[in-house]
Length: 333
Image 1 (spheres, rainbow, N blue to C red):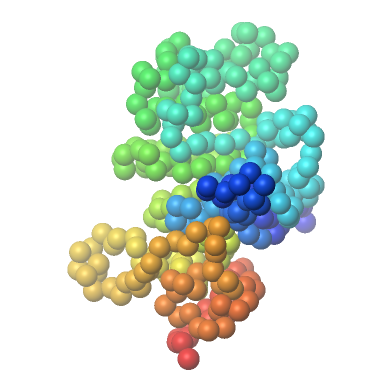
Image 2: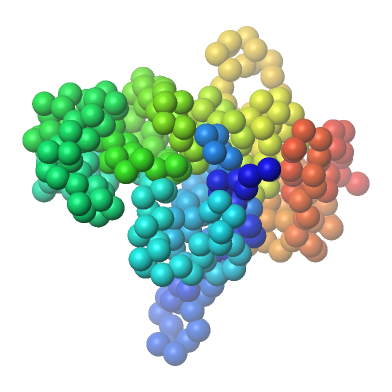
């Protein structure tokens, strides 16, 4: 059996944050943005990574591509650990792993034309290509993402938000990557445009054999595009399962609250269904709760939840959950 395309094993990311008003020699705060996170992605599949803002999703994505240093853990690309690779090796791997960012306009250089923006990765990874070949590849990729090649000499400010995101996708795909990491790619777009971009990503995935890591806080979007879903809370992966299994049979209290927050199209069914209430705010990653990080907002938390970090239980249907009280009917004692 071949190795997965991507494996993230117990990855932690910690930042040093200076204490406000402190002396220069005062030790900084340790901000734990990601704590022992593990995910796996197969070729051609989509893994949705969902959670509230501030849960560490984007930091984990940047750790995978190497723009954020990893404190502990491994990132395996086709079975090879890529943590600590030289700059040259990281640059070479960049051809195979690309990102699409949240704000489509801010992600594009306003001083460059669309043609220059899309062509730039080719100049880095394929310096021997002729100008004619580059222009042909850029025009073909623009058509592939739904943009007219005649717009090649225009600037980003001349396009709508949805068109700018298509430009960003074209730039990311021009080198023929195997993995596309989409960091909140539709959250800044109108609802109708969101659907168009998600459908475009699915079409490109099918045509190019792409694997997608799709990051969002909107579970309704994630469930539509993902084969598997990982739920993240305060830097930790608390539940992972196949998308239909996780939506139909969520086990972690946080996952249940996220699913309950997605509205149902039927007003009658919406009024009648039970909604678990998620109270309180996300704790600070500089002072996370002891034990289970979700316990301060959990409706079934017990005294023991403050003592140790819960181990990840492996359930049926390749379902993983980090909660010892995940069984149906569990109530606090």
